Image (cartoon, rainbow, N blue to C red; front, side, top):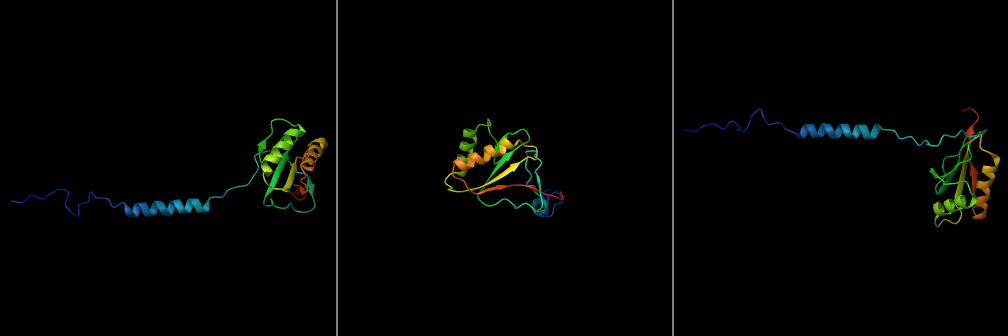
Length: 140
């Protein structure tokens, strides 16, 4: 006498996981491809207005941001103080082996004029002659 095994072929208790894995993979691809990443700065500054549209970040550029209180940031990293030597050291460290990188100054519209002049002086003392200023368009 031969007894039938409850777990024989064709049993309803077996779940095929391959279609489930396929669906999860398609969902993962959908979410990855539809996700948007914003390139917004975490430093809250209001750029001064200009008549032309601002140019996008140039390759190999260093971003020097100055907030309304005159605090300096180099590539989104806050500097420990506002002294000229600290700014020069940070710019030199970020520039690395680059001889003449592009320095983009992003100063808040309410930044003290002295803070911008200090940033320009630091770049000049390091021999960085390519200096640009970030602005927003007059229509924004």
